[in-house]
Length: 98
Image (cartoon, rainbow, N blue to C red; front, top):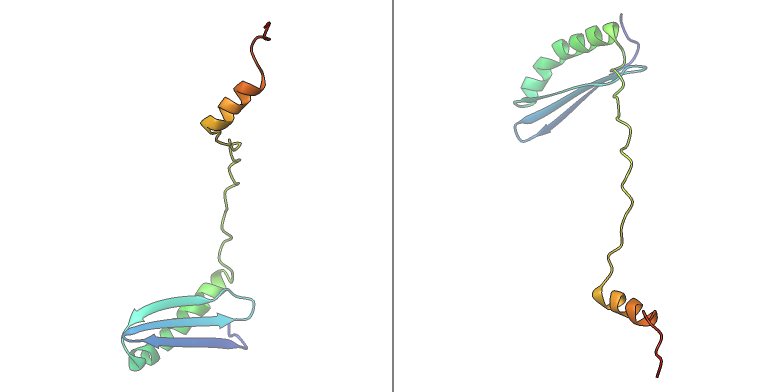
């Protein structure tokens, strides 16, 4: 199916090429390859054809399934030895008689 609007992106960094194609109401198609500008320009017609075939079959990629978050265990606070000793002194085990 011919599309009214198609955007093609070419990003070249050193010998790496990023190709992207986007159409309205379709998920973008992306690819990376090695080469130069000439390589990218030669690849565009087949890349656009692949994108159109993919979009005709399924314009949107399947939604990802994100697992439910695992419940966190309750956090425990560490007590220092000084706090334990202070608590022991605060409550005497037996009252003093003399």
